[in-house]
Image 1 (spheres, rainbow over the protein chains, first blue to last red):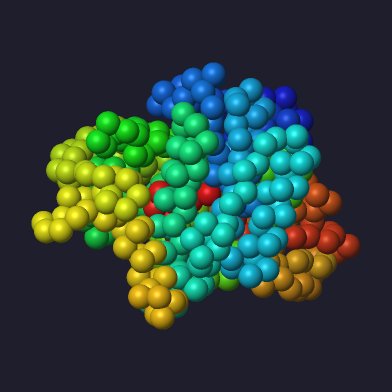
Image 2: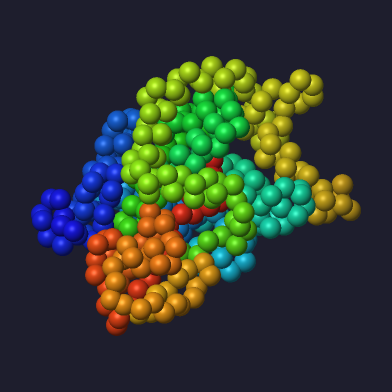
Length: 315
Length: 71
């Protein structure tokens, strides 16, 4: 296979574009795709301070690398989840990348910030690990961005992530979630202060295989091993199913996601907006107005439950 | 040829010569779900492989919490 640009030997085939690329032209292709996405969805401006949520995995490190290559002011944020050696190795990958690139990385951990790890949280609350992990990551990413004064938070969600989420939301007809699924989630102001920082996903045009190829070809030493708690994860099963469809019919993922954004997402906006938001009585984060009592966000409720069970003598 | 597979890490022996496409078919691996690596660079599906090659087949699909919490 030849590179579609220079006709030299290709190292990556991108079947949905019916194209092969050599190393240098593949990297340029990815840069162009991400730059186009940032511009098309008005994700951020060149002088914005950007916080990149990094896990040590391929997508977040590739995203950070692309934003730095494109000249953005991008700082990394790593959250230690306390998942044994896996967390140690993923943090080492994030730190090594930051050091090699001379980029600023903010490191926090759930244990130091809140007194529990993801495995502990799962046991204490009897929730599946991915559920508590996701809740805590969303909360901590947003908190870090607000506390450190960033205009925008970016995450490494790729095309496969978005299609798998869309697939799940359609399977279960989560219409409020369909109304919120977008490459840009605007800032939310509750009670006169910003409770949710603007959040964007610059990799939505990049397939998971492409972000992995980018990381490898750029020499980014990302953590290849999978989280030990992820086995049987629903999102992963959806991805496997969608990948079979993509293999049989290249372009399926792109058609599903960008077709949804173009033709369907606006039909669900009303479902997402119906929920009135108020400030959490404990932390001030935005949350749903309860029918009775003081409003408390799901993070604060979960944390309170976990710490009450961890330290029953203090309850 | 020696083929390193991941998660969990193990090595399998496959008889060459062959191509990337045929190798993945023999291992019952969906090509869209992996990268095939030789000497720190990537191989396309039509690439020829020899008996002396040492390869890595690296999965690319990650799981996790999905939704809006991914890093």
